[in-house]
Image (cartoon, rainbow, N blue to C red; front, side, top):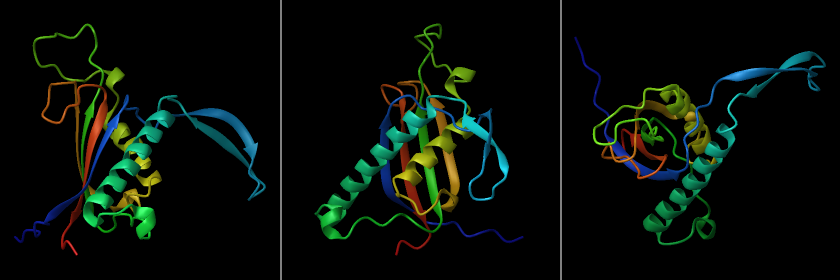
Length: 178
């Protein structure tokens, strides 16, 4: 039996987003419309959660800020003056720690887990977050992410937990750092 080689990982970007994480994925039917390109009728599906769009916008803004800060740290100048920032490409890894609201009814003095519908499905939280990162052009495409570690936690109950709702996202390149 052969084992796959362990890929070296190199931290490329740390993004801190403040705001309530919102899951993406559930759609609702909103009627039919004529598709101008094909001339056929097609169903119109809209995002069910009204919180998705604001969350994605917060992720995009925080990602742009993190990219600018990383570029300044690495090159000592603003990206626009130096030809812009290149998106991360190749195999990528993402670590995400989502900090969600703790219900008022939850115990205050002991660790609890965000397992209610109110905290969102972790896979749908990842989907909306990856789309926000892709919207900021930090990554060539979210299909480049081949490994994900995601955690949902309440404020103060995990080493990466924020003191308010939001997320800490770390993006790594895998393999040769060049």
